[in-house]
Length: 297
Image 1 (cartoon, rainbow, N blue to C red):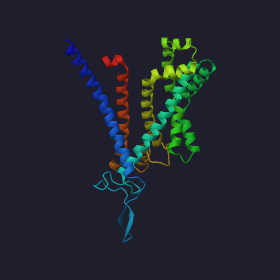
Image 2: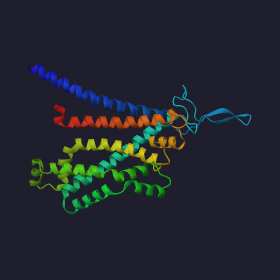
Image 3: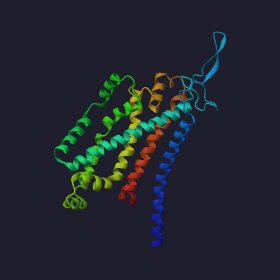
Image 4: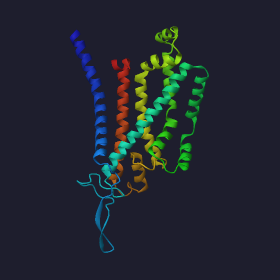
């Protein structure tokens, strides 16, 4: 009987971990392909030429809207660039932007949600007021105003715009978790020994919230990548670098969908969807991994 129980438990763990491993494996494979391709082909703006008859003469002109072939698996775009190389660089830049957004949003949310809560008093009230203001602040009008003021928007600038409005919900969630842990026995023991509130938050509470902070980070990654694509589609994204959102924006501007250039507009949409789906899958796996009740089910 004991052997049977052990076997069933082992089978359940394998079943759970197989889902997690598949999600992480696919995500790592996607990243490896993107980053390796970006290193092998470092120049996404390289324009390929072809002989074209113009005014009765053969001239070397950009190979615009080239059909997919062995040399150009995704064809060439409206500028004569290899669309596959552009896609790899766009996916890499979108991931880097999402990672930047996740890092800073998680840091801000942790600082405001954990340290402020433990410190209490005026600091906690001030952090709560700031969080509430950013929660109700009209994001889209403010982004339009910023876009009109900053004509040349780099990835860094757009990432800062996204960070400004993406951290408040995480700060509220982390604050709720900290308030729950604040009443635990190990925290009371630390208070009795005379440890300051800030040190308790950093040394005692935050280590017990690593799993939750990892979940917040994964969500922020997907928000950063998805929101960049969304604001780029309405013309408020970055203007100096290639991203998945910028590729979709160019497809809208140059009527790729209407003209039937599916090899130009579909790949960035597919890669963007893969990013979001894989982040959601990893987030769900981590929720089950860190929650014993769900793991038992």
